[in-house]
Amino acid sequence: MLQGSLFLTRLHVNKWWMLAQEVTVLFHGTLVAIYQGNGIWPMFLFGFAGIFVITQMHGLGWSRLTRGLVLALYVAGVLVVYSQQGWAQLNEIVRIPVIDYVLVFVIAGILSGSIHLYRRFRLRRIGELTQAPT
Picture (cartoon, rainbow, N blue to C red):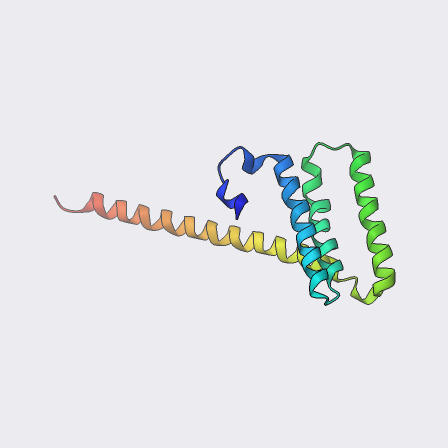
């Protein structure tokens, strides 16, 4: 909600602010799942970390070596945790990124469709007003 309230400000697009948010949601989601005791904390940890590794870390200006090390730590963490949790649950790591990216495209489609409809009806209304008898 804070990020949404900062829309169209410099802070909204600040790469370090975005990093802070990604790390915060990663820890928050993981800790909430741990406290609930349902055993799905790896899904949140590696799901949100996966989003970071797939998209966010590339905008930070890190060297290729640093990005490679972050990816290696991610993969090592997945291997360690799921060797103990069971490989059958490995699909958990893609659930949150898939949901996140699908929702981004759904919301973009809704907004794009809304803008298209608005423009279409606005142009129709303008056309009606210009053709109205005086």
